[in-house]
Length: 126
Image (cartoon, rainbow, N blue to C red; front, side, top):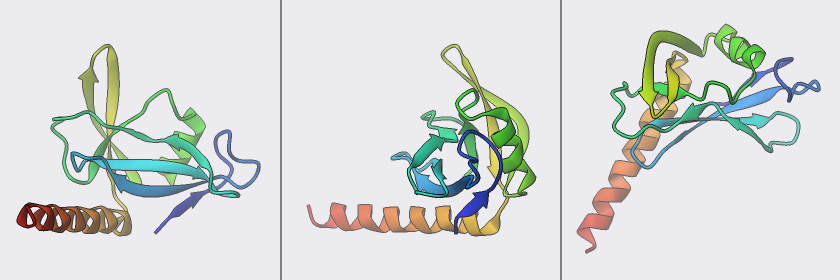
């Protein structure tokens, strides 16, 4: 399921953005934003920090990449929540957000199951 956020950020002319869930190669959640009117990539809400101690429904938020008003609009949807935790990586600090929308969490779970099944098939074929 995609969530559309209207009237926030630079892509709100007036279409807003849609939220999609993907996975990074280490199975951390990737949260991507697309312009709602044409589907073109807008921004990545997440950044991948390998070996970060985060739960399966959490991600490191790309602070400074997405406008603050859009971040607030995303939180206002109820699909995401701030955890109050941060991860330090290099010279940057990344807030940890939790996905609270069960459909989005379900998508991530299903993608992990598919990825695990594909990896098992590849190992058996070698």
